[in-house]
Amino acid sequence: MRNSFSQETTQHFAGKKVLVTGGAGFIGSHLVETLLSFGAEVTVADNFLTGSRQNLAGLSSQLIEANINQPTTNYLPSDYIPDVIFHLASPASPPKYQAAPIETYLANSIGTHYLLQFLKEKNPAAQFLFASTSEVYGDPKEHPQAETYWGNVNPNGLRSCYDEAKRLGETVCGVHAREFGMDVRIIRIFNTYGPRMDLNDGRVIPDFIQCGLQGQPFKIYGDGKQTRSYCYVDDLVAGVLLMVATPAARAETVNLGNPGELTILETAQTVHKVFAALAGQPETTLEESKLEFRSLPSDDPTRRRPDISKAKQLLGWEPVVPFEEGLKYTIASFQKK
Ligand code: NAD
Ligand code: UDP
Image 1 (cartoon, rainbow, N blue to C red):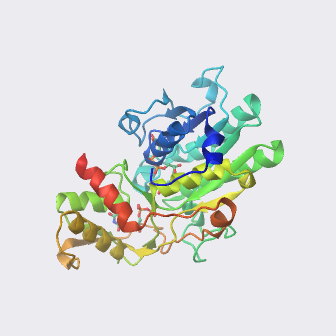
Image 2: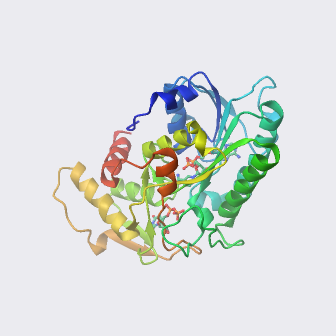
Image 3: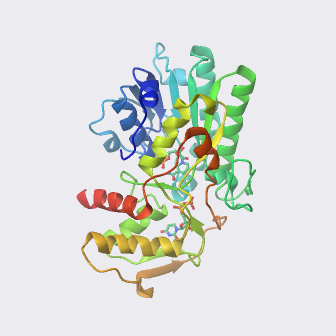
């Protein structure tokens, strides 16, 4: 973890019972690791749809292998009462969620409902954090995207199993906050990368790293002029923890991401540059022969960049790891493997 935390934040979690759904995934496993370092008692519920046991290797969290798309009584011990739930269980990579569309919409909709109903009954004072996404903005007509923007989503497109389900998950959270006074917080995560991503999961950063490691050309979907903004996982996890530890963030919805914006072609160039730097080679321009253009998947958002003014003001949070540095840590971690 490359971020430091105030004593207030670490104390918030020390000794608490924390349930992390999706804790065996990329972001979840980093979150679990940091929570354990704060002295939290962490339980992970995961069915390894897209995560792995390996991600939790060496961590002292409890692991319950379970699908969260079912009532919690089916998988949580009857005497287990958490103080905090981080609900992260859901595939996040477009090819992965499109390969499991029903599991995806259930995890974010009814999965969220079951978890909140469980808390309402067992511990209505507990805190609940829902991992929503920048995808709720769809192919955004406002740029950058602030939380006040309602989005431009195709309700029946290839991405809808994910983005509409996240939108419904947000609704489920809002209803439980309003109707039952529960402590619910929503984060909208923008593209995040780092060690422990699944190199085969089809997202752009692991795809480019995989190509770099194998000396293959980078696959560019469309003309490569679409943009994304990439946040290093430690920065993201710091924001996630602050979101729960900050009293004023109760019932709020907050963007978490890095506002640096790059086209996909610029992304490929940067990954290429970092590979060269790690190999001690001089910086070169990426040649055409190192690019393989493919057709753009439908509903692929044209531009994406978070407006993080709210996170700055409410949480005092902003990313600190520059893209090239985060890529170095990430590529080096895969080279070590
Ligand atoms: P990931 O695929 O690495 O992790 C998801 C984890 O959830 C995996 O361990 C998977 O096995 C588990 N899971 C999925 N469905 C489940 C189910 N029904 N029951 C139990 N476990 C289940 O993805 P990630 O990148 O770590 O994303 C974590 C969360 O953050 C997701 O909710 C995702 O939508 C959200 N998010 C991530 C990004 C990003 O850039 N990484 C961006 C926006 C939102
Ligand atoms: N992309 C690409 N090459 C790849 C993987 C993805 O050009 O090997 C593009 C993809 O079409 C999208 C962007 O990179 O425009 C980001 O894709 P990703 O799957 O990482 O996440 P998204 O932000 O689209 O959910």
